[in-house]
Length: 420
Ligand code: ADP
Image 1 (cartoon, helix red, strand yellow):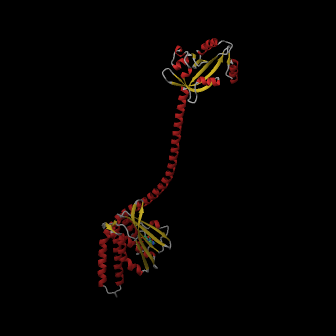
Image 2 (cartoon, helix red, strand yellow):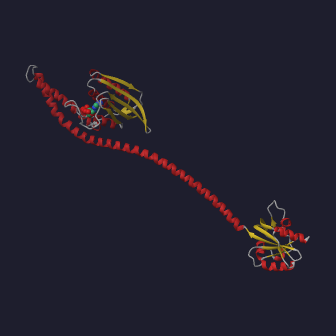
Image 3 (cartoon, helix red, strand yellow):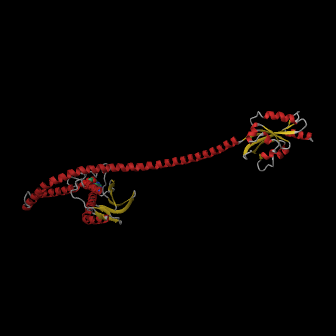
């Protein structure tokens, strides 16, 4: 029977055969294990503790006397599927790196990796040597590693979020660049308008002075020449010359009146008005004049929200535009006036469009048409003040006036005024 056991152990490859007696083995092994740093325990074939080294006693917190003779199974906490260590040893002869717990004297379970090998004496008695490897540090490191893994995952997630943020920012940057371009364009436009306004201001002051200085001598000239004309017979050789003088002085008076408006000698009166009414009233005045020049008027007025403005001044703008349109269509044509409501950048505007089918404005002068005294009309016909006056009236209304023109096709003026 013992032969058979020995044979079986051999087969399983765990056998350490000795020529010494069990007592001798126990004595020798008992001495050796005291020098080992790993916890080692000697268990006899009945599963009772025979000896334990210092590391083992310290691990479990017992003295050797307290441990000796106690069933080793009582200290073992096996994975639930295993019955007991003694059963495992009976079945397999040895145990290798079994993850289990060792119950300490104060009731804690210490995780260990436990290996047991038998040693057979000369009379085939068996003693088991069990070596425990404390796994607490391993498990702590494992837990730490798990924590690090979680932290790593969190960081990867954060990085992913960051990446998405960057992508979004890049997209935003792209959009901002477009917006910036639009702002730059508007700034340039505003700068041009500002330049135009400051030029107008200086010229306005000069014009006011001129109008004031010229008015008095002109009244004298006009009065005297009219008087003389009345007294002169049409057959008189000076009659025509006097008539020319009267006409010239009337024309000068007109220019001075223009200058007065230009220099804003008359303060505008701002009221809540309907821009469509302004257009209708203006057309009553210019209808005849346009008809005489074979100009057809096409009107398309949409209902508009009210604006705050000076009806007289705005009428003057429409008259200026209509007069220019008439001059641009010497052989007749179509003058179209339309209105609509426009929403732009969160603001609401009333927009008037005045277009003609005239000869248009050449590209090389279109940027000068709002300049005071700029005219392409022959002497005596244009003052070059109509559009610059219109420009400053629209500016006074916090609006804007723009032009688009195509040679031999016509010209369109756009006026936008903020609604109330
Ligand atoms: P004026 O009519 O006395 O010349 P404006 O300031 O009203 O002065 O106009 C300046 C110039 O702008 C005009 O001389 C003309 O060359 C040009 N212009 C204005 N309106 C038109 C138009 N509808 N078609 C063609 N040219 C125009």
